[in-house]
Length: 271
Image (cartoon, rainbow, N blue to C red; front, side, top):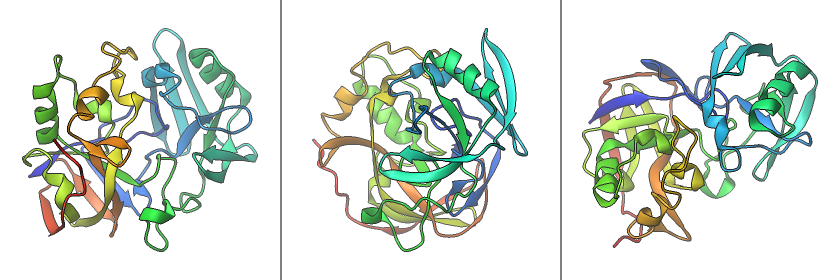
C-alpha cells in the first residue's frame, strides 16, 4: 500500500491543491483549511449550500491568499483585520478578517453576503470530545485533522454505481492505493513514511459527495449516497473514508508506504 495523492484545501470547501509532499502538524496537513468563508454573523459556509465554492481556486503564499474564479478574475488578500468569533458546527473560535474587497469578491461569486476569515491559532479548536484524546485539535475541517480515502474502496463503490465517480468527490487529504476494498475499516493505527496516525472513526458523508468538483454540478443528485446507504451504514449515516488524528509530526510524500500498526474490529453495519 502507498500514498497515491495528497490534497490540501487551503479554504474550507473550496478547490484543493495536490502537492508531492506535505508536512503533518498535530491539527492536520500544514496549510489545510486555515481559511474559511462565513456569513456576516460568522457561521461557516460550505458546498452543501453553495456548490460554486468548488470552482474557487485558492493558493497561499506566506500569509497571502490568492483566489481565482474563472471568468470573474483574481484577488489577493491578507487576513490582518480584527478577529471575530466564527462558528464551525458547535465550535466557536476567533478568526482574523480580510479586507472588504476580498469579502465582496467571494460574495459576488457565491451570490450571498459573506466574509473571508483566517484561523490564526490552529490549536484553538478541539477535536470532538467523544472521539478525541486529550489535547487533540483541528483547524477548520469538519471534525478531524486528516481524512484518508482509498482507491480500492472507490473501485468497489464504482462497480455498484451506474456512472463511476472520481475520488475527489470525497475530498480526502491522503489517498491510498493498493489496499483491498474497505480494509481501512479495521485499522486503528497506521504509519505513513515516518508519521503515525490514529484512526478516530469512519467519515460520515453528506451531500457534498454528490457534487462534481470540476463543474459544481450534481449529475445524479442521489448518488453516491443512495448506493452507499445500501452497504456502508454506520449509526444513522453512511460512511466513506477514515478520519485520522496525527500521533507524530513530520513529512509525508507521494509513494510513501502505508503500514498498518494496529487493527481492530469493524463497527460498520454492511450488507
